Image (tube, rainbow, N blue to C red; front, side, top):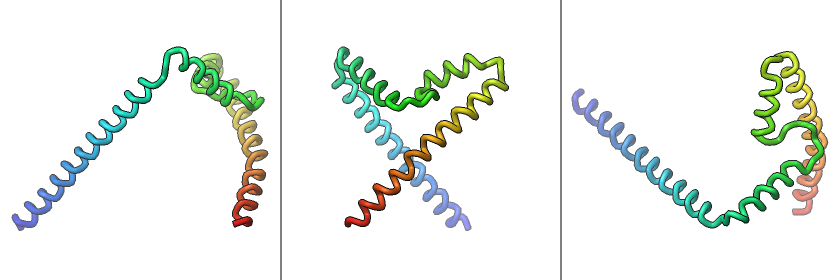
Length: 118
C-alpha cells in the first residue's frame, strides 16, 4: 500500500515538474518573440502599420464598432441607460449577423468550387 502511494506521488511530482518546464520554455519563447518583433518595428513605421490596420478594420461600411476602443467608448456613452445599451447591442448584433449572412454563401460557393476542381 505504501509502495502504491509512493509511486502515485512520484508520478504526480514528475508530471508537475514536466509542466513547469514546459511553462518556462513557453514563457521564454513568447518573450523572445515579443522582444525580437518589437525591435524590428521602427518608430515611424509603427504609425504606418497602425494606419494600415485601421484601414483594413474599417473597410466595410458597417455602422457598428470594430475595435475594443470603439466598443468601450460606446459602452461609456450608454453606461447609465441600460435600455438604450440593450437596444444598441441588439441592433449591432443584427447587423453583424446580416453581414455574416451575406458573406457566408459566397464563401461556401468558393469552397465548393475549389473542392470540385480538385
